[in-house]
Image (cartoon, rainbow, N blue to C red; front, side, top):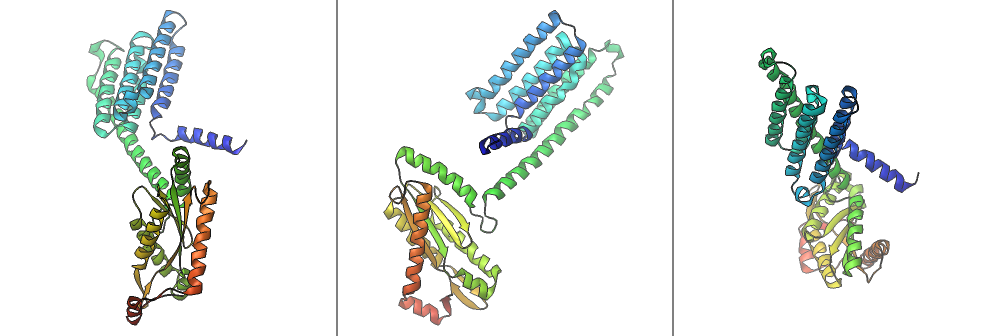
Amino acid sequence: MDLKARKYGSSFFGSWLDWSRNTVTIRLSTLLTAAASLYVLANLDSGPGFAIFLIELAVFAVAILLTQYLATFKAAPRAQAAVSSGCMILFILVTSLTVAGPGNFMLLLIPIINAALRLGYRHMLMITVACGLVWVFLRSQEGPAGQIIYFALFAELLPLVLVAVVVKALSGDVLTARNRITALSYQDELTGLLNMRAFTRLLQSEHQKAEITESTYAILMIDIDGLQALNDSYGHEQGNRVLVAVGDALKRSIRSADLVARYGGDEFVIYLAGADDAAAQEVCNRVSQNVYNITLSFERKMQRVGVNVGMAIYPDSGVTIQEIMTFADRTMYRDKDFRRRTGPAKSSADEGREQAGVEYWD
C-alpha cells in the first residue's frame, strides 16, 4: 500500500472514530437504519408490511441526506442537527406504528445521542423531552391504558436523560482534548509560534494561491546572533528566555495576514503575504529594531539581542517553495558572515549603553 492509500485509509477510519464532527449524523443514521432493519426482519414476514418499511426507509434516507447536503442546512449546523434528530424521531415513531411494533422504542437513544453530540444543552434537552414523549406513547401501545403504570413509565425516562447528559459531557471533554492536541501539534511549545509542520502546510496553500493569482510574497529567515555563546555562559534556561522574547518581537513586527514560525534551534521564519522587495525590507528593518529593543538581564548584566535576517521574494528569488526558502537561508548566512567580519557599527547611543552595562554577547 502506497503512502497516499495509507493516508486515505487513516483519515477514513479516523473520521469514523471522531464522533465530534458533523458527519456523526450520517453515521448515527446508518446505525439507526441498520438496527431498525434488523428489528423489522426479525419480527415481520415478507409482504406488504416489508414493502411499507422499505418506503419509510427510503424517505428517511432522503430526508437525512437533504439535511446534510442542502446549502441552507450546511450554513446552519444547529438547525441541521435539530432537523436530523427530528427526522430520526419521526422515523422511529412511524415505523413503530406501522410495521415494527412498539418494542422499537429503544432506538430513541440514537437521536438523543445525535443531539447530545451536536447541540447545546437547551436544544439537547428539548430533543430528549420529545423522545421521552414518544417513548411514553409507544410504551402505552403495548397494553390497555388501565394496565399501564405511568409513574413507572416516566421512571424509565431517567436513563434517557442520563444518556443525554453523559454523552454531552464526554463529547465536550473529547472536543476540548482534540482542540488541545491540535493546538499542540501546530504550535512550538516554547514560543507559542507555529511549528514548521503547520507553517509548511499554510505556506503550500499560500504558494498555490500566489501561482494562480500571479501575486508576490516574501520569506524572511531570522537567526539569533550568538545564542550558543549565551547558552554556554548562562545555561539553556536563559537561552529559552531569549527565544521567547525574540518570538514575541517577531509577532509584533508582522501583520495579521502574515505568518511566523520557529524554524528550529535559534532560527525563525516569516511569511509576508503580498509583499514585494520594498515591503519585505521594511519588515526586515522592523524585525531588527524590535529585537534590538529587547533588553534582558543575566547575572546582573544587561544584554541586548541581535539577529541576522535573510530575505527572498516570490517569484524573483525562486519559483518553488524550496528555492525560495533556500535563497532566504543563503542571504541570512551572508548577512551573518558580513556582521562577523565587520562587527556591529557603534553609534554614540551604543557607546552610552555600553557604559551603562548594556552589551551584546559574543
